Image (cartoon, rainbow, N blue to C red; front, side, top):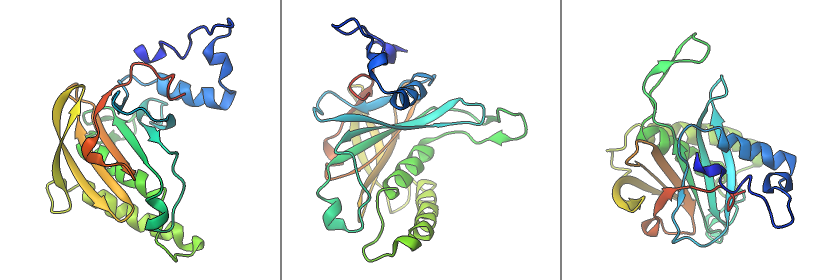
Length: 221
């Protein structure tokens, strides 16, 4: 993958960029580099900060999906007013896969679809929110309930909760499913190469976003 182009490049002082990254951060970078599919992020029209989030792997260590952040690194917010002060968008990339056997051969893994990207994006937004006045001790119960709701919504992309939105992917307009919530927005669609794209954020309008393949992870690392 081209994503290795600058992560391992030599610096002016003769030290590799990989050596300059702390060990823990390097392990995160390695997770992205192991992916057998291209990562997507916001295109060059976005000029703000970029940062790595996390990857999701199968039982055998195969990277299946991951997210890249743009803008302010979000913190957990318990009220909409505080959430609106943050401006960020996270882009989720999901490898397109058919129904397949699990890595250990004991079961079957479902195919990944646009709904997979929608659910990951919806649950990702929930990770940074909880309702105003909700006690911290109850947040896990609330999060479980809302995650189930996000799954149900992702499984019904033609339902009333979603609207249609066209956004550029690698320069070509592509259809997306879009919905808003009290704490931000969620969208999901696909790239022409079959990779599924999800995104979520707040403080940044989804209507002006564009996505492109990340050819270099250095701006994120």
